[in-house]
Length: 364
Image 1 (cartoon, rainbow, N blue to C red):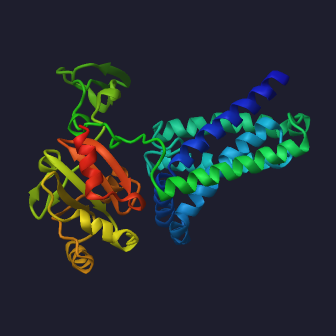
Image 2 (cartoon, one colour):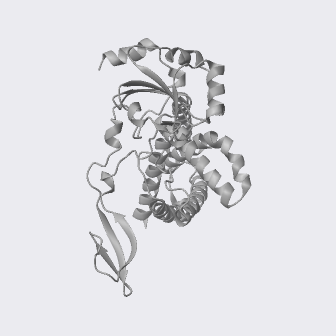
């Protein structure tokens, strides 16, 4: 039993630290996922969940830092009774959350490990079931764990971990994630990621006379009832499937991915920061080395008013809000593309000068 008890302690502790650090790296992304949960719950369970949407970023930072601190506390044996109670409460809540998402197919990606590791809803639920068992062992044996450090060193460890994680989370919010796990990270060639790397292969699940059969090709023989098709090489599927840019009835996606484009992303204008609007405005002036485009998910009339009010002279186009939030964790945010390859990304707090953009192009 001692081996199981210690395994549970270190396995749960390490997983919580890893999961929390991944989220601290991208608190804006975690906030987007929390907003999605709140909106689903507001629609399906109770309208008051909508009240939590404005607090999503705060809750993102709080929960992410708490995960890391709980993991460290468990490993070093810090106040293990309180730690085990909080862990148990969290895992019961998250198990319900993932079961609800999986069973009702509401949120297709739980965000447990940010964009670093994608889990299906049922994979997330099974993961939480395993954690629930391990945390159950920890809770059962909570009085038998011994601290690894003295009281003073434990306090220093926990306070230090909390402060470091808070600083990292705030920095990631004020700038961009330290590590970009998304398909739009610097160096990626977007047109390549919009294609399958190889032909997709499926297994067709059919039923006949109460028996289930699997076929690599769709059966031509009659009598089979189609149940589902399972993709057997998902790693070959396109990583970007929803990038579309339009204006009116015309599609400009191919134009976006050709030539040198400086893309200013402004999704919800009511949430757009104007702190660096003067520097953004300077980037919209004509430049021989690059074309400046603006992508927005706001409506035509609203963006027209916003554009004139802030004197943004660049041509603008429309795209899906989720895609724009995925491209850059900043509103506004900036991307530099050359023939579809991402050369650079900036948070609005780090808005470059035109000379900075040209310097990057000169290095290519």
